[in-house]
Image (cartoon, rainbow, N blue to C red; front, side, top):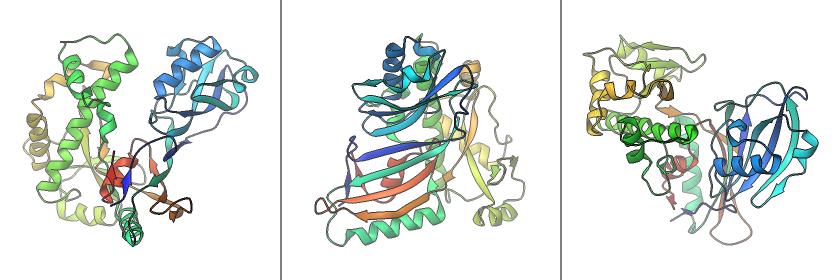
Length: 332
């Protein structure tokens, strides 16, 4: 059975930015490559090397630790020529250019992935290719991967303690990360309940549906009519990342009952999220996400038997490991 073990030599991630630095402005954007570091560890090392404060370093999204990853970061009042020559243990700057604004979380379109699988038995490649093509045609369940909940799996518990005021976290970035683990657990539980009660993309009365072309959302009042549009790819159901200002299905409708059940299953009440205020405003997230295949999407490697390389891209916030598990690949 194919297996994926995440290491800097088997997992490659490259950020797809919303925009590129224009070459002028008070901020310096650096295109970095890191190996064996979390994004926050890379931020700290980069800041120390260039005499900046870690809180002033901008980035668009978190990247995996056990991987070779490339992403943009920004620093204020740093000369590009000085930043361009930085090379540290596990981190090097590949390019540095000026830009007008600080890079903010969410300023990315997605990520390109190359994943090397091992222990692929004879004849298994055809099945993996068929699974990959099927997922690309129908969309990937947009679950949060295990890494969202921390290497020890304790981010959810710590996040709950912070949400309930039983624990303090002075680092603002870490506080938001831990609180987001609570949101992610609710989202994943909603997906489980949707699958168990008829299907992930089955349209229910009261569902918050998102238009795939514009991103606009509305409440479903005619499930049969909207199901046709979901099946055609025009709409996608969403599930909650609950917060102080998040949109909810109307009370008394099946979609609301399902989402309330998810909160109850995790021992949560909607009112608890209001306490987090600006740190946890809340939003909605599509229950499935598109997959773009690389060229070629699957390639048998020549450096050893039983090794296969996959190439694909996912939108921001979606997980390569979730795709692998959907393909039946063992992950560790």
